[in-house]
Length: 283
Image 1 (cartoon, one colour):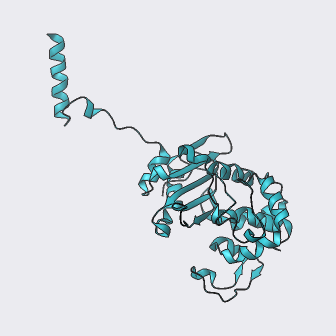
Image 2 (cartoon, helix red, strand yellow):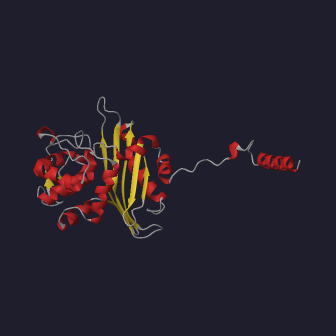
Image 3 (cartoon, rainbow, N blue to C red):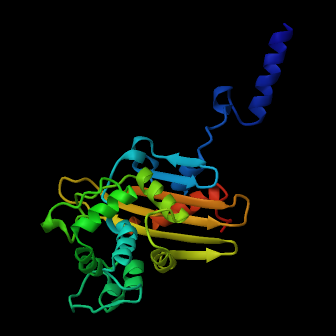
């Protein structure tokens, strides 16, 4: 009888709290900070992957399951290794080297003018890299990608030399992007100090008190029979203050069935995730 009274009292208490029974009062599962960030920015967690790796203690945050190791075309994120190889091999003299616009109107307005190499990186001016990459040459490209551990390292035959990173065969996973970027952030890639000193400043995206963000977005348009558009955002964050100081390498990619209208979500979701784990300050 006492047990029944206790149960009745508990039921009455739950009813007052607005719950009609035990099951509905069970707390909702707590989502991980990366999934929370994706949802908050309107990204479908089922078609996205995010890997964040803190260099100092090797702590890793991941979302994406098997997609973490799935390779995709790197698109414009390949401008990071291409820039490093262009400077290292002398294919480009400096980030200030100027490339004269050929007068062809392209779909991004900022591409339709002369570009320094630094601007071409920041604006993702494909036509400049289609000039630079053949200068590096297939042998040095293949050697460089192998030394960097950059995805499958495949550049295809001569007919692919101006677009192997935009469609195929070059492909890389989020996990491989993070491994490569960790070495870049540590400056342990087989490159000269001059290359680091010239290239890294051009990769800076934003900075605040105690932190600097470096990175590159990428977009691969879908082709017939090849699924959705794919969006990338990769890079690293150097954080000297805040609640979780350290250097964080990251790689994010997502299906973009809405095309470039969804492009802002790439960086927004990643930065929110970095804030969620304390790597970036609020706001």
